[in-house]
Image (cartoon, rainbow, N blue to C red; front, side, top):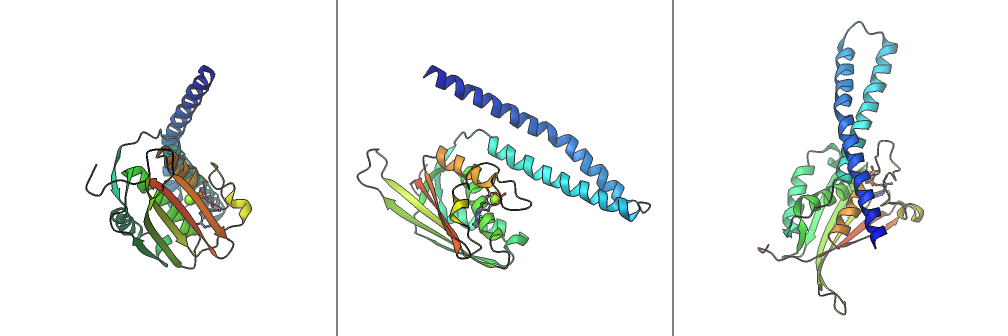
Length: 239
Ligand code: ADP
Ligand code: MG
């Protein structure tokens, strides 16, 4: 037990250190990318060098994305729980994501049972939905449909006191994936995208786990994907 605690302490310390380093990398990175952007504006730069500057810019952008995603992933999951209305959350996300070019050919259909609320940290739950929705849109570069379904579930015969849950399915009709890929989805840094960080679903998993929820995936190549989340039910209007 004591050994386990020590190990947990050490892991937490390493996590903190990693987050600190990521944070410290941010400022010099901003200077590099700012300076290169200024250089690129000069009319005296030969075409060959301009190409090199473009590479530096692209790569600093990549590093920036990696560090931002890593900081979200490494952030300690301290939960600020309240009842979150799933319909409301989806509506807000719809408004937030509409202007995003990745959603220009994607339509979102919501079918959430009235009164579906979960006991969750609102900001973190938004992060979960945001990651799943962006992944769904990225799997449909030529457009398609995302369906969000929410249903109240009563799990009887469970040993724990908690019996009321809400199940949320986020379904897309995009590229889907092979079974082999579905096994590694939630591991940090697993990505099949040239500009991906592979930290989106690792973050999702961590957050759902902290909420004592569950997440499942069902997918078939070229058919599409369904991510299903099970979260403890909250009360509409309650805290
Ligand atoms: P990233 O989006 O940066 O690649 P994620 O952790 O969000 O990292 O996702 C990991 C990988 O899981 C993606 O690169 C992709 O291969 C696969 N994936 C996730 N969601 C979907 C989806 N809805 N459809 C198809 N593949 C997906
Ligand atoms: Mg992603």
